[in-house]
Length: 190
Ligand code: SF4
Image 1 (cartoon, protein in one colour):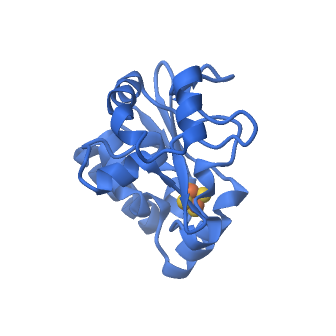
Image 2 (tube, rainbow, N blue to C red):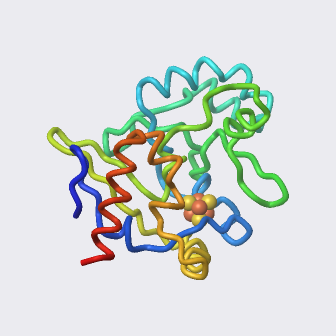
């Protein structure tokens, strides 16, 4: 573990090589799993505000689930997460294009319709950030759906933290990320 500010960053974040390979994984992280994407209270508020726009892109069954069950819920780990479909586990904000699952919120952001890109937890995946009373854990979440990402990253020699530079800056800020780069260099020099 490397300590940066109040965050403890696992060595995997420095050592794993990673680039999402959407052509292989088909955007499985929007669909797989038994919980939704973690959202902060502020993000949850934004999601509710933009829902009237986002639902223009969502699947009818997802709109219905969101309108009847809510856009988010507190899961078994007591975390606030985006709503998912009961049987498939798919996030209600996911749609499929050319066989690939994508995020309707991000699609709207790319079109310049909204300023919120997507929950930072989605932006950061496969890094997971968990806040504890006295520190913040920053870990690589190993999951076989991302295996192609490891292969692509290894081929390109790109460390996970560099692949997720924008998301890490969004979550922790420029100064924190600069310290992460210094820590990475120190690890290589050791
Ligand atoms: S995080 Fe994993 S599942 Fe999601 S797009 Fe990247 S490689 Fe695919």
